[in-house]
Image 1 (cartoon, one colour):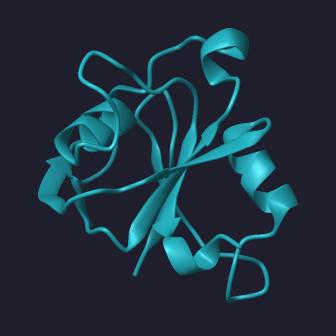
Image 2 (tube, helix red, strand yellow):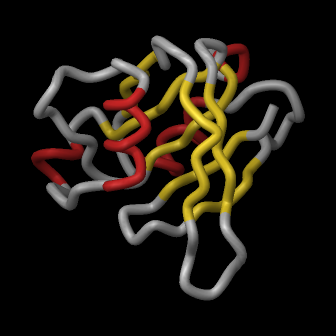
Length: 114
């Protein structure tokens, strides 16, 4: 199962925990640039293909075994909408209709967040 960071600019980077098993609190905070909050993925989504300008398309398929780690204060500190993260959490019924995700996010299997 892949883990990746999705930036507000739409860049998608595959990442792995430094210890190979789970992300430390510092790694999670660095990924989202602040305090963390965890959004469980409630239902399966995908596969969805996102195209980047300078790369081939990136395919994302999420199940309820994934979580999205967000900046808990993202809407206040960096109110820039993360369109890809918002599409994914809306499609999976993980956020309320009309809500949105701000800032960079980390998506990973729930077992990688302790």
